[in-house]
Length: 413
Image (cartoon, rainbow, N blue to C red; front, top):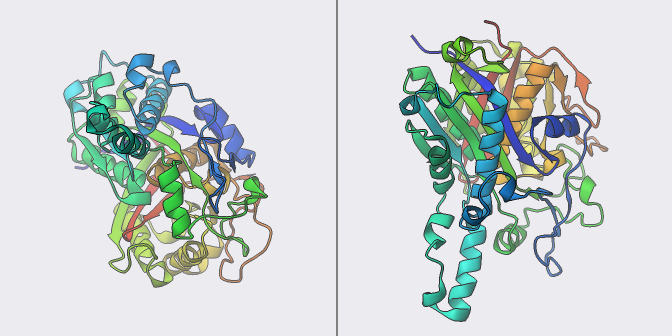
């Protein structure tokens, strides 16, 4: 018999705040964390805006010397994991470390380190490249560091499915607990891709918004005047736990995970499949995995990137799966406030979905001013609202045509 899986802790490091309380209050209030990029000179870049994490000090979470040997994405992962563990009130002395896993996602890993060390190689030669270059750069190092920090000796993996990475990691973690492989998993995603090369690459693809004169209004999912996504960064980490394990230790339970769906478009390296059919199948699989009917879903935290194709096709995918019920459920995009943090996006958005179910509140899609005839659902425009949410989906779709959907349920013992 499958184990039931619950969420007992959340740890967000985001452009609108660090820690659950600040993050959730700002999300509920529809606050934007997007501004002109400050981390490097963006003078010659067509897109000059991003969702940067503000006031992040690694030494608040780890030894300063050790932090210097980590890429920013690893620092985010460790800090968010610590916040999630603290929020869960896990007693590390009583957790069976052999049944304690870490499964994280990152789309790019240590790209800032890669860029910096390549510059050193070009200017000063191979003898000056850091001996820490490789362990700072590789994508799995964040999960490795987190496991070392907590002595987690169970299932350890890093999932790379582009912008679906964190959601894929949550799905893999959910299944590992459900099978009985582990009791507790630190799961989610981390990304620090606001770097010269990454931003230049997305600019070259013409994927980013160029609404540079209005940074806070630039990410506008489902709005008729959307012109591209806004790059973000940060981490979203959750503590997933076998329900019996959580109840036995008297944990506060936010909600339950009951379904996961993952598919491939098998269509194009960057463009979504026509009518969002791959995303539709991921939602269908998650709903079937959870053993519920589509009309039971109350809320969808959308991938909602603010790009012309994604928002149109995601809307079509929702209509494909839900039919007339598509007009009765709420759909909102967290990216309107924090931008798109690539491999970490699904982690942050899962936290929003979890807190929405737990708190009974629908967070808004901000900057929604002009209706698009192709996007005609209830996107919770501009202002959030209270709602009874029993079942909620979180969608993530990535380059390469990789799609992932998680289904959450209000917890009932």
